[in-house]
Length: 419
Ligand code: DSN
Image (tube, rainbow, N blue to C red; front, side, top):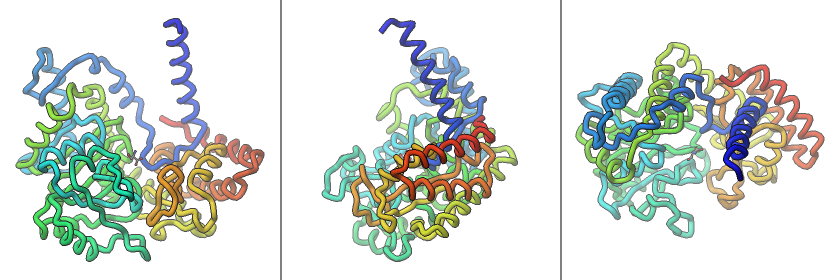
């Protein structure tokens, strides 16, 4: 393909994607819409600079400005979460959450050590040592460490910390991890730290999903308890793709060397600056209103769906996400997600606790409100979306009904433009 045609085609596709984001509703809880300032930072000339090494200790010349940027972003990260720089260290170079978690585990643990984390079907994450139920090691974390999982109580679909304690005593892990992708309830970080301490393990709280809610003081902070906290920056924190690692001062050096030269080369300076802008935005008083509204919207959506006969996992949500187990409706997660896409409602299929389906055809869908709340939507819109979800799922084989809903969704979306 000639260069000019390729460039034109790519520019067209970018503009089509912008249009798609504007005219559909993004209900995937790990997605959000960043500000123009974040986009400008990420698209800036900072990406031209190589800066391997920590800020102030680089292997390349010409990095004094990049150093200033990285120092500023690190300080902003500590400030946003009210952390004392004498007690906490921070790393902003990890390109993604999975890489951040790999840096933490490889930095603090011997290869082959035992790690205990949330089961994926109960809301955990691949990078916490996930292996398939038949034992197949499909992640680097499961290949490097001996991984074990704790699960939600089958009746409440919430963690029973007494059972987590028992599991920890059986497994005797070197690290206990909480957090992940789809646990809709508050995690008791104080209890998790006690459990970890009782077996001599580090406690890593992965708050990738909740970072913005914690920054906005709408969700409990893990910092008083955890030894290490990791987060991605693109979800509720409303920044670019990236991650932040916070660790108690005495642990940060090992993690830093595990990241570079252990895992990564040159950091993504443009993303780091974009993270800094997002942190600054999260310091504004209105970000607290945003975080609180994200949760109100998710609860309004969960309540409405429950009224409509859906099994909302754990009976509701304390945060920005909810999980529907569709087995009572006899619809697979895949069929549901595809039907909703035709109605311009973008969700993802997801495993649910005690799933009897397969990861590529699980029994549920996951919904979230960070992106619609950024657009300015409130409970009224969240309830309307729940009604559309119901109508679309009931009429999943009726293209004309899905198209009709899709048009109504777009009309609403256009009233709430993306930043
Ligand atoms: N992408 C994250 C999420 O959707 O929660 C998982 O890696």
